[in-house]
Image 1 (tube, rainbow, N blue to C red):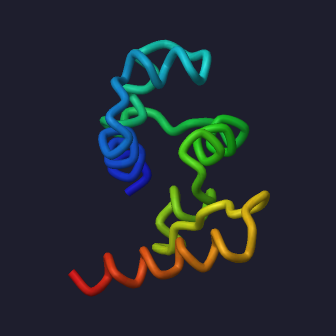
Image 2: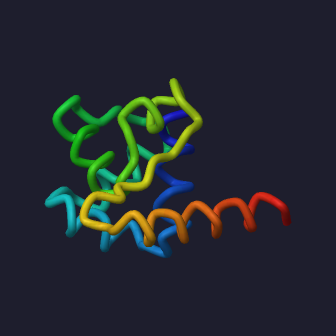
Length: 92
C-alpha cells in the first residue's frame, strides 16, 4: 500500500523518480525500491516524504484516505474560495 501511494503521489505531481530522489537526497534506486515494495523508508524518511507531498504519514500508510491542504497564511476569504472549488470538483 505504501509503495502504491508513493508512486501515485509522485506521478500525480508529475515528478520523476530521479527528481524525487534528488529532492529527498537519496538515490533513484532508493525511490524505485520504495515503489516496488523492495524496501520500506525509515520513519525519518517517511516523515520527509509526507512533508514533500504535503500529506500526513497516516495518508501515506493507508490509515487515512483524507488528504489535507495547509491553508495557513491564507485569508478567510481565500479559504472559502478553496472550499467552493473543492465542492465544485466533487460534483463532477
